[in-house]
Image: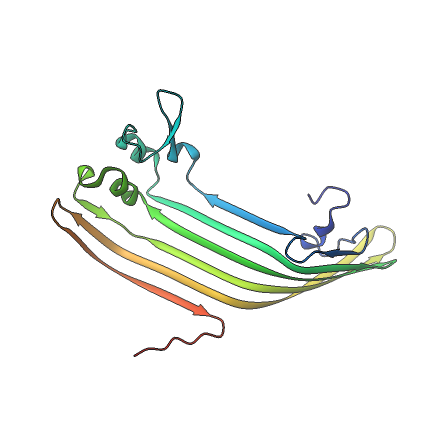
Length: 206
């Protein structure tokens, strides 16, 4: 989008960019970006059936060994979002001023291969499972002011200053979590930690 004429938010990638015109973005609708990242592929999760339909890896006709062979030791899925609350820009003959407030959040989780083995094959896949899980999430408000100015015909300079306000942050780590699955009893051993902070919140303990 940066190389398209008329794209409003070029200043986010280049602080010296002079906007073509003044603008005002509609709150929450002016700019919303959502991304998902993973080291899994669609073929790890969906498998073709003989009749041409697609089934998830949990379908009983999908070979469990084939599923496990295609997976990584650690399977990572993360999601992030950037939601614009308010933004506007003022263009003069030689300068460009921008101001914006946005909310940004990110959630990530690491799912070990043994978790898929347990879900797919149960005790038929073995009795010992190593389930080292981890997850993290954070959210914050970003308020930014930018200024750029034309100097001569072929040069413009600019900068942006940002103020960040934390809303929430959490980090979960479960280390060396071992599950022994028998037909009549499951035993879990492990240790983990959960760290979290939330804006204007104080945990009451007894």
